[in-house]
Length: 94
Length: 185
Image (tube, rainbow over all chains, first blue to last red; front, side, top):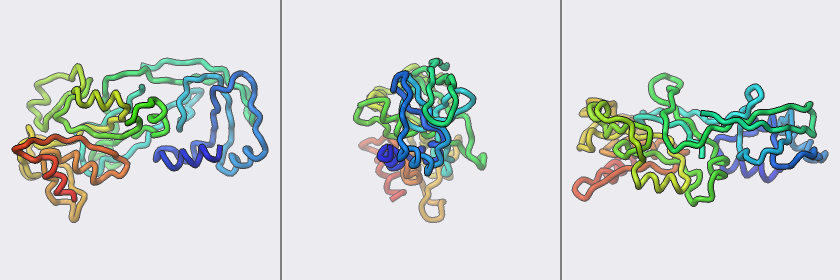
């Protein structure tokens, strides 16, 4: 988990630790996941308030926004400060 | 435009049992403009998707690479301006993306915008842009020439460190990419 968080911070400029307020673990089946004390302390230190396990395997890794009971894709908004574009584009889903 | 997957949630840490709906945008190969303006209302706003996600969608070699495309190259679902309002007004949204760009799309790139250019790729300086404002050159006093015709592409790669590639166009007779590149260092 620690390595995963470090990797996320290294490779991605959209993710930041605030997204760890809720951690969603997926593809783990119906059984509950056991959270070790070490993992719990680590996540507590990052501000995690909730860990959720789901059995869906279609969820892609990365940051999401929890809005109501839905997981929404999170986009980082940046101004086109030098007016470089005719049009900016909505991210596509694949 | 959204499909939903009901997923049963089991929680092993702090929270009660909840049912979450995962909102997945239906996959589409057609592009849409992003409607939000910049925080100062002067320009547009980019919407950047997480590289974690874009790299996970595909094993393709360019998965997660962020690019922009000069607006004389077609993208499916969008109109093309070639830097000219009359051209933009005349022709409808494109039914297909240009072959060269489709190859990039098939290899996993994330396209974030279509860049400005001089009208019909003519040799124009900012004071000669009529239909659309020229992009700003981030160098020096910000009023240096952006070059052309791939002015927007050159401006974008020199301004935004989060951008990996901006596509321009060139010709033997008129070195349009290299001229813009020289203006931005």
